[in-house]
Length: 227
Image 1 (cartoon, rainbow, N blue to C red):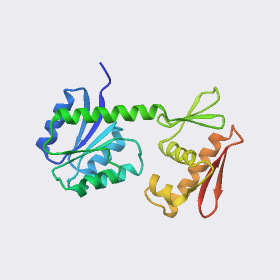
Image 2: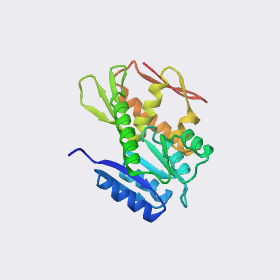
Image 3: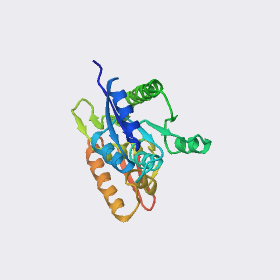
């Protein structure tokens, strides 16, 4: 049997949420059902789902707000919005904040399942090609692993991996300090900036086996990775 797809469902209509959950679980999904956006954010952090299905209109934290917060720390997880609304503006907003797909209620379970499988398969394919070379290192971003030549892999933390990913994507260019702080820390205040400095120091230590690689502090602007 194939591995079950871990799906987080945020839906405040209890009866509908339970129907969707039970239907998906008969199709080899592992479903975490949340009744509002606040609970969903906590479950996202603790459960590490592969895909999110979010109702737009929820109490405490709506689906769009939740998606914005998750997108600030995770660029890749697929997000499908569920809504009873049909206004074009809502569709546009959903995609503009990082949604991958959109279903209007009522919808068929078959349609939801097909869309979920398509997004999960596409994401896995994209991630499989995300091994990046930097100097004598290979960096497997999805697995958060850094490997020097033929040595064992070094496991990075979630934040280390995302910070290194953005440095590499902007190689030989200055990575704007405020931009990356807001993206990975959610704020660019003094304490977050100090935390980022600590993570930069950790990355420098992990990359020191190749002395051609440097992470340069561009005072007042940010950091630049060169190799």
